[in-house]
Amino acid sequence: MRRASAEIWDLLEPVTRSMGYEFVGAEFGQAENGQTLRVYIDKPESDNGVQVEDCANVSHQLSALLDVEDPIGSEYCLEVSSPGLERPLFTESQFKQQVNETVSIKLRQAMQTETGSRKNFKGELVSVEGSALDIRIDDQLFSLRIADIEQAKLLYRYK
Image 1 (tube, rainbow, N blue to C red):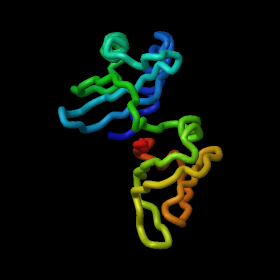
Image 2: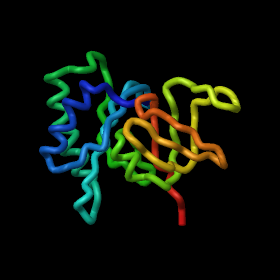
Image 3: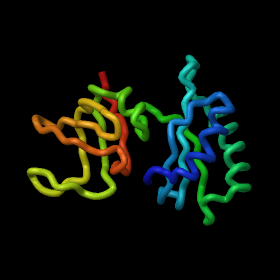
């Protein structure tokens, strides 16, 4: 799965926000059950977090919108979910909230490093400045452009 297109984000975000939820992001791609559009919502002001009913309500509204606008043009499954403990990261502000945490990042294309070509990174998110971030893996620091990231998530630390 990879970040859904800007066109899809532009359709989904205002509807989600108008319903009182935070639009965390959306992914589109091949999943276990075929082509899937996965939308993540949050309810940060709630003590109970996102409930199944919240996902169902948002799914109903987004489904109607997507049927009318038809931005995908092929058959797919719509999933609405909370971001969970290992929340996906899409935006600069989401990355900034996770500085000093452990993250997993997969780039769209491999980049050349001192030790060879690399596409996957798992380490401490050290800083986020503008459209780039720094991640520390062992004693090595890597600078990555947010635009080059295919998929990123927070790695939950069990305490």
